[in-house]
Amino acid sequence: MNEKIVHTQDIAGSIDSVLKHLKPNGQGRQALLQANLLLTNVMALLRPIRIKKREPDGPRVMYTAEKLGLGIQRVRLLKAAVVRGIREIENGDHQAARETFKAALDSWDQQKPTPEGQRD
Image (cartoon, rainbow, N blue to C red; front, side, top):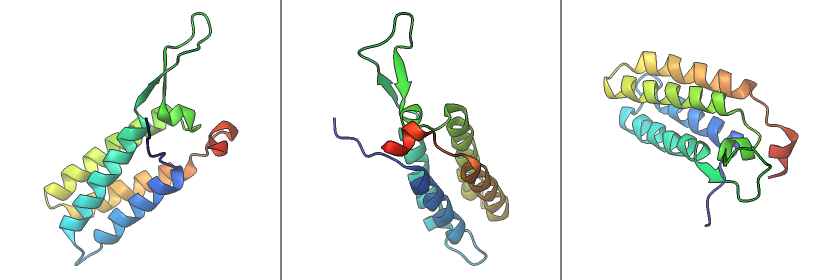
């Protein structure tokens, strides 16, 4: 299986792109397209990977985010923020969407991958 690996800087760049299109007099449709692409990338981080050689009583799956050294809970929180931001864009509330995506970017920027994730 040939999967695209999503890196933390890809996520931050995607959030920046959404914010760029949400500026006053921005392009709401483009912002929505970028936000949906961001959601697709976040969902890729939440994809489970089966562990073939596991320790006794160890987990059967590992998430892509964990493999990259990212906290699974933070990725889930990011997903919730992106879904909320998409809903706000669809409702035409671009100011609320900007605030949602700015908070998501600040939270994401605070996350540092583990050394294991930095090797990939």
